[in-house]
Image (cartoon, rainbow, N blue to C red; front, side):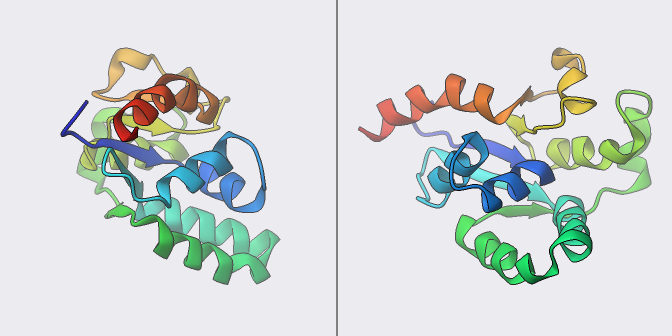
Length: 152
């Protein structure tokens, strides 16, 4: 891993959970990413940002400024919304609403897709893609010791 950043793709639910909790794996991930460690490169999709903003507009509109501020502190690479051509080969792998997330992770050359979506994304056959699909807790368990070893 030395010399290579791990590209961590954040699903919408990780962004929301991390922003609105003062503890837990999603929050810890956002806190670590805000340190701008050279061994980590945060990535998300424009689709995920739009999905998050839509959720916040509906459920908690006063939180939109905090969300946008958080985004600016994470230094995210933002993948454009995937085209139908990018999504078509993925049909049937997961729920249709999650296909743009998977396509965005592929386009963004993610090493790992971190999601809390137990119903759909975490049930995908994990060797179907060029990246790991992990829950926030699994991500920390698998990668945090490596990051600490590289940083210290």
